[in-house]
Amino acid sequence: MSADKHLQSWQERFEMAEAMQPLLGKLYRNQGVEVVLYGKPLLNASTIEIIKSHRLVRKHIGYKLRLRESFPFVEALSKLAVKQCKVDIGKLAINYWRENDNADGIEAYMSQELAAAIDHDDHEKPRDVVLYGFGRIGRLLARLLIERTGVSNKLRLRAIVLRGGRKGDLEKRASLLRRDSVHGPFNGSVEVDEENNAIIANGTYIQVIYANSPDEIDYTSYDISDALVVDNTGIWSDEEGLGQHLKSKGVTKVLLTAPAKGSIKNIVYGVNESDILESDTIISAASCTTNAITPVLKAINDKYGIENGHVETIHSYTNDQNLIDNYHKADRRGRSAPLNMVITETGAARAVAKALPVLEGKLTGNAIRVPTPNVSMAIINLNLNAETNKEDINDYLRNMALNSDLRNQIDFTESTEIVSSDLVGSRHAGVVDSQATIAEGKRAILYVWYDNEFGYSCQVVGVMQKMLGLNYQSLPLG
Image (cartoon, rainbow, N blue to C red; front, side, top):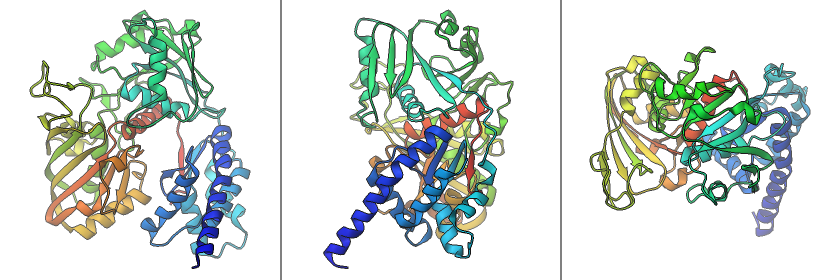
C-alpha cells in the first residue's frame, strides 16, 4: 500500500470514529444504552480509543473489524427503541458479516438480536446515591456515576458526606475530583458552589454534607429520599456500625466498599449478586482482590474442579501505609511504602468462600505490598481435579472472557509486553495474563492483573445497581 493510501485509510477511520461519538453519547444519555466493542466500553471514548478498540478485535477472533463495518450497526442502533442495556456492537457486526446471509438487512437483523430490549418497560425510577467518604474509591465512584449523567440514568449521585469543613475544604475536595495522579484529569468540568456547599460536575449537582456521625444527618432536608449510602471510609465493617446509616432520615440501604464482618453478605458482582434480596439493607462489595480472583476461580472450578490452592497478591501500596517510616499498629506497614516491598496479610483468599462457598477451606493467601501506586496482581497456584495444559486452560479462559456470563468481570491478554501501568483504568475485575500461565497435569498457576481502584469501583457500581433493582441486559446473548 502506498503512503498516500495509508493516510487515506487513516483519515477514513478517524472520520468514522468521530461520527460515532455523538451517537454513542446520545444512546446512553437518552436511552440508557451502553455500547461496547468486544467488552471494551465506547462510552466517552476518544476518537483514537475507538480506533484502537477496533484493532484489538483481531486478537479476539483472528481478523480485524473495520470501522466501516461496525458504523452501520451504531447508526441502526440509534434508530431503534432500545433501552437500559449494554450492547456489544462488535459481536453483532462480526456475527452479521460472518453469516453473510441476512437478506433483510442490518436494521432487521438488529431488531431481531435486540428484541429483548426494544420498547423495554422502563418503569424503574431514578434512585438517590450518597457517597459517605470521598477518598480513592469514593472519588472514582463519583467519576463513574457522573459519566453516566443523562435522562435515562437511574443512579443519581446526590451527595457526599465528609468530616471537617474547614475553610477551603470544599475547593480542595473539588480539586481532588478534577485531577488524579493515577487516573488523570476528570473528563468534564467541576465547579464549586461555596454558598450552598455543593460541587457541580458535568451538570450533576452534588450536595456536600459535613458530619461526624451517620445518624446525625437528615437527608430528607436536602430532598434526598430512599437513598443508598455507599460507605467507603473503612471505619465500620459490622452490622452495628454500618447500621448507623439506616438511622438517618432518607436512607434505606447501605453498601460497604470493603469486606464485612458477621452475617453481612459479601458480594462479588458477576458471581453471587443473585444472593442479594430486596429485603437486604446492608451489603458488602468485598475487597478489590476478592473481586479480582473470584470470577477466575469460579471459571476454573466449573471446568476443572479445584482441590486446593494458594493466592499470593502483589499489591500496590495504599493510604493505610506510611509515606516514610513511622509508627503503625500493624506489623511492617509502618515502613516506607514507596521504598519497600512489605509482606502483609490478606483475607481475600478466605473471603472467596463467602461468594463461592464451594471453595471454603481450599485456599490460603498472603500479600506483598510493592512500591507502585495502583494496579496489582494475584498469582493463583492451584491443584486441580482434572488434567490440563497451558494451551487448553488459556483457550478456556479466553472464551470465558469473550462469551460467558463472566465476560464483564474477566479480561484476557495475550501481550508479551504488558506491564502494570498498562492496566490503569481497566474496567474488568481481573485480567488474565495468558503469557504467564503455567499448567501441566493437575497443576496450574495463573497470573491475574487488576486495577485495584478503578476495576474494583466498576464492580461496586454493579452491586449498587443490583441492590436498587436496576437490571441491565447484556446483548447479544450469544
